[in-house]
Structure formats: C-alpha cells, structure tokens
Length: 68
Image (cartoon, rainbow, N blue to C red; front, side, top):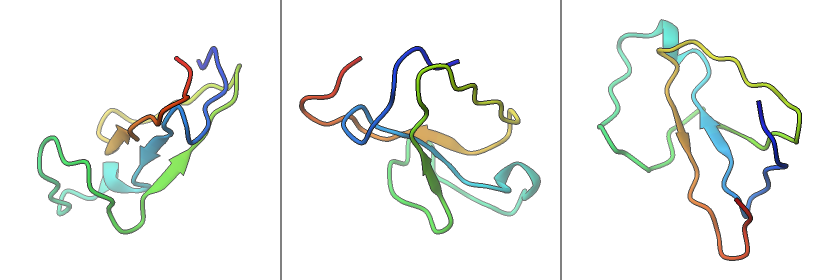
C-alpha cells in the first residue's frame, strides 16, 4: 500500500514480469543494472502492489529533490 505518490525522483519499483516462473534467470545479488524486459512502476498514493515472493524486483535509486 503506497502512502505517497512515486515519481522518477522518488525512484520507482522495478519488476521483471514472469521472473517468478522462470528458474533459468540468473541475476547477481545486489545487482542494480537494467535487465531486458524489466518494467518500472510509479504507484500513486492508495495503490496496492501485490506480487509473488519469487518475482525479481528492486527499487530504482531516488534522485535529488525526491520525497520520502
């Protein structure tokens, strides 16, 4: 549940659709590089994001001027 709007400045939620079903995907731990097929979500206040525990995801780095 997002309590604030998320923009590029706050850093979006990056997910790799289908990664929870594909055991052949190998991604280094603590990798912050873009991956082919990833999608960046910018939820708005009140949005709920529900995802499978095995879905690859990361937070995109926030930028100067971003809020909490």
